[in-house]
Length: 192
Figure 1 (tube, rainbow, N blue to C red):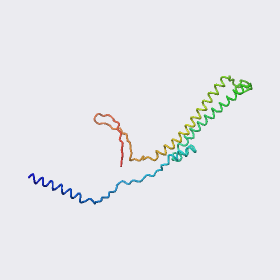
Figure 2: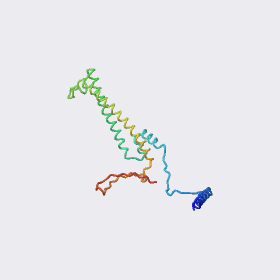
Figure 3: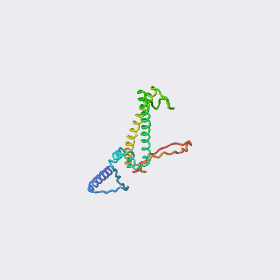
Figure 4: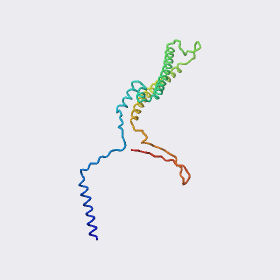
C-alpha cells in the first residue's frame, strides 16, 4: 500500500515536471486593463517660469496660468517701492536742511515763517532714521522680487505632479457604536 502511494506520488511529480518543461515556448500576451495616457511635461518649465519672472515680475505667474497672483506680486513690489521713495525723499529733505543749517542759510526746519524748528541733533537723528528705513525698504523690495521668482519656479515644478483623484487623503469622523464616541480617522488611498 505504501509503495503504491509512493509510486503514484513520484509519477505525479514526474508528469508535472515533464509537462511544465514541454511548454517553454508558450507566449502569453497580457494587456493592461487600465488605459494610461502618458503625461507630457516640460522639464524646462520651472526655469522658464523663473526666467520670465526675472524679466518682468508677474510674467512667470502668467506663464503658469495663475493670473490671480499677479496683483499680489505688483502690490507687494509697489509697496516696497513706495516706502523706499517715501523714506528717500524724507532723508533728502533732512539732509538738505542739515547742510543749509551748517552753512548758515535758511532751511525748511529753521522755525521761521511758520516752519517747525528742528535742532541740529534732531536733523542728524532724522537722517539716520530715514536712511535706515530707506535701506530696509530696498532690502525688502529685493527680497520680494526674488520671492516672486522662486514662487513662479516652484509653482511650475509642482504643476507637473500627479494630483488626480486616484491619490486621495480623506479624513472622516466615525461614530464608535461600542462606546458612543466620535473618532477621527484618516485614510490614504492609492488607486492603480
